[in-house]
Length: 296
Ligand SMILES: C[S@@+](CC[C@H](N)C(=O)[O-])C[C@H]1O[C@@H](n2cnc3c(N)ncnc32)[C@H](O)[C@@H]1O
Image 1 (cartoon, rainbow, N blue to C red):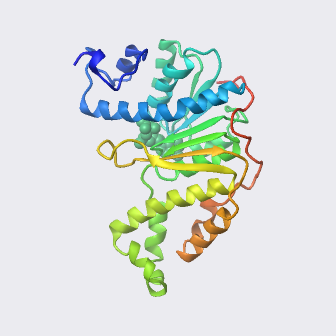
Image 2 (spheres, rainbow, N blue to C red):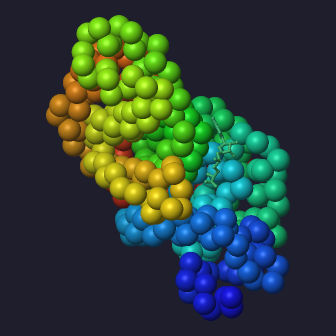
Image 3 (spheres, protein in one colour):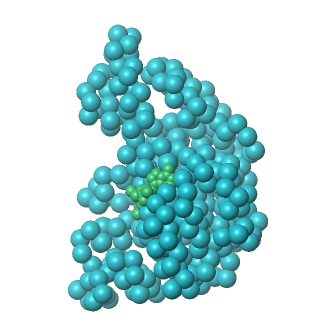
């Protein structure tokens, strides 16, 4: 198939970059797996670009941190579509696996993507890292494993992010807690039938985790929107959560979060969804001051 007939590739998008990322083969072909990945990333970029434009229009960088970046497909494609034609803004990729960061750094150098940095550390470490600015405009976590998504939320709250864009991955923690308390819960409430079977514990645990994440964000003054990233044929981990800081906390969100944890006997998860202890209020949506990345 010729490049002009590949609908996932956008006008002006760098073919060289897609080849370097091994999304396109050297002779410009796209296999089924790459097509899925490209479709997913480009769909996510459609959600993110207007948010970046809004931040930029208010004078913000924008600064973006992508957690659990992996091969940094999202960071590179966002840079190509949005940052390359501008002279401001910075993308940071956070990734545990050092070798992926090294590869991404060398690709960014080759492509002249000078406003990208790759930090080999965990999301949790990134919260306190002096290598990142005190404020970040937009935080993403695309399929960041298990509780790395929750750490990304804590990171975003600490950095007073105007926007948080999450596509959560597998979630094991809540399902494990549901399983541990199942006997007691079954004796106490017929609702426990919802997670009696192991498969249902996993699925309900996943759904519940994301509902609790939304409440956590709403209690912190974010408005949340939950939708599908792309059709189910493309990925099973398909839920997209976009949170926008408005400054107006939903009145009953914190109380409801607590009530759900109590009702489902999940009090041990309290600290996972608790509000941040350092409690600086997030900035209003639309732009942390522009910055120079500290020492990256
Ligand atoms: C499923 S991959 C997704 C990669 C990329 N976001 C994408 O969608 O193509 C998850 C990545 O997150 C990284 N990861 C997992 N836990 C992490 C953590 N706590 N901190 C930083 N990176 C983490 C893994 O090493 C892996 O590269």
